[in-house]
Amino acid sequence: MQQRRLDAQEREQQRLRRQLEALQQQPVITPSTPSVPSDPSVHPVELTSSEETELKVLLDKEAQEAEVNWPGSFDVFGSKTRFKISGFAELDISHDNHAIGSPTAFVTAAIATRGGIPAEGSDGLTHFSVQTSRLAVETRTPVGKHQLTTFISMDYFGQFFAADADPRLRQAYGEVSDILFGGDLLLGQDWSTFTYLPGFPNTLDFEGPPSAVATRRAMLRWTKELRRCLNLKLALEDPNGRVFTNAPLFEVVEIFADLDSVPEWPDTVAALAWETDDAHIEGAVITRDLRFSANNEGTISESAWGVNLSGRINMPWSNKQDFLTFGYVLGEGIGGLLNDSPPGAIYDFENDTLDTITSRGGYLGFQHWWNPDFYSVVTHGQLRVDNYEFQRPEAYRRAKYSSANLVWTPFPKWLFGVEAIYGSRVDRDDRRGSVTRFQFTSRMTF
Image 1 (cartoon, one colour):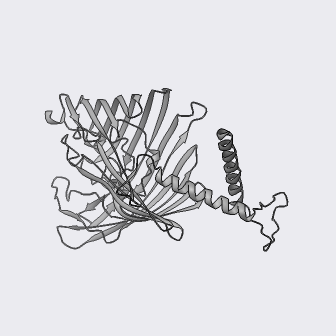
Image 2: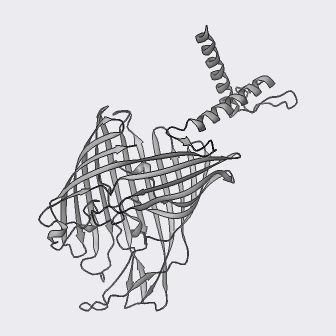
Image 3: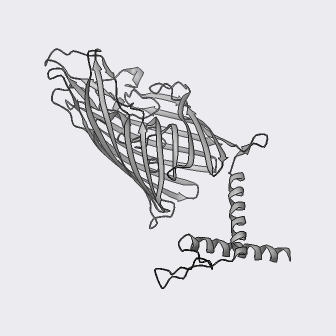
């Protein structure tokens, strides 16, 4: 008997949900407001007053349950704010066969092209690291019809080009839903709007391809759902990530100036994301004000720009869990926003000008599940910059990155993985270097 009543209640709830979905697309007809549908084949849905009341109660109840049952969350002394603590503990063991200046993250720009030293691994080097380990705290608080979300996370990459574990702030922001023209407003430090995380390949290596846009910055960002599956993002972001270099005054004598970045305006970013069950694709554009002072003697400025197209597409013809990730970036003066961070501009002493440097590159990644416990990811990426003839011979010109891994997930919160990574770097004078790294990873998530 009790089971039959539960079944009946479930059927009634399903009926009300279907009516709600229809209401979202069709006008509601009431006795006082007659209406004629624009399409004669579409019939508007009519609800009685009792059904409207019952539907409202059901939706309110489901909204409250969704808030209370936020998986892994808890409240403090019955307050409206709910908390969630998450993260993971990770051990990475890596071995390099040649010199690279980044012992734990595989930065192709750090590959030695002119010999290298034993401390950088010129004769082979092994490192143990827990720098990737992470801790995050998130809160959600209902404020009237809005929701206030805060998020703070950290890892241990305070010394990025060393294997020591130093705490580093990753994200620290607050976001209010439906607060400005129907959009969400975020203030604080988060992934740049020029970055699109769903498009990142799932490498065990912390860094990934040289052309990937992976930067976090302080910002003010507004996000608005234009229509189902389509979101618009507009942001003003901290103008960091400006990497300048200087050119020799003569062919033999080089003068090294103290180049201080003194940006006058923030970076402006606009992005449009299309997200469905089978595809997540985003296109973003950025404009920048490159402005610097050489030895504190006045300022020189130049405008910069960039575009980034990246995403993730499911592969239903291969396996419902398999997917392809991709990214392509092009721009002038955006080198500091990329994983390899090549110079974005160069100061020409002879002409007293700041010349932007063009960067272009892309990557592809494919993840395949062999069975419910094992998967592999294969990734390849490249980055190239257009050098000027007056740049120094050791100036960064191009880099390549390839990786393949095998990951085992014996338990939902624990994975083991092995990965082989190959990278190469070429300088303006065609001097080159390459490194092969083998990495073992254990990650326990909480």
